Length: 182
Image (spheres, rainbow, N blue to C red):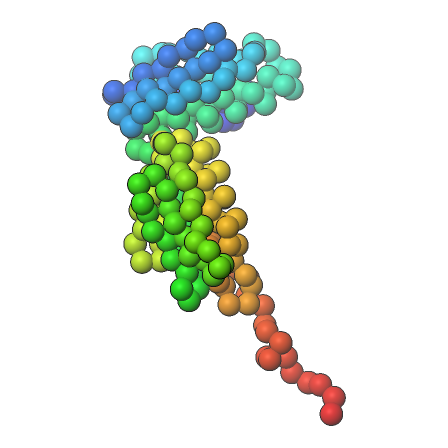
């Protein structure tokens, strides 16, 4: 059995699972999330726990078993607590400003960059830190990766947009090189 797939998902109060042919949805206080249900895998409610099971032990169904369980756990956490991702903006004159459903960046280019956020993602800026919050983990990761892509951190001075927990390997510049011929 799959180590991940066989673990039950605890369903907190106020959260419900709705299954339709080919789809499953989780509804909670922070919203509703849906995913397609792959064939060969089923979800059963046993009291306040959800158990994911598979039809047989084929390689394809074993892979789907853990995948569906992981998606289900992420969806349950998303509709109860929500997911959060923090990005740090480093560089002289680099900044971000939230206006409605978009974020305006000044990242050293000749023009400001306006990034439109999806409906489920909200943003907040404090000094040089951009905090993104969403119930959908997949969408949050995709949005934060696209924002980081606007100006990836460079290895010499560390300027750019990076994840807070990301460590940039710094390189020694040309002026710091030793030796040489006269």
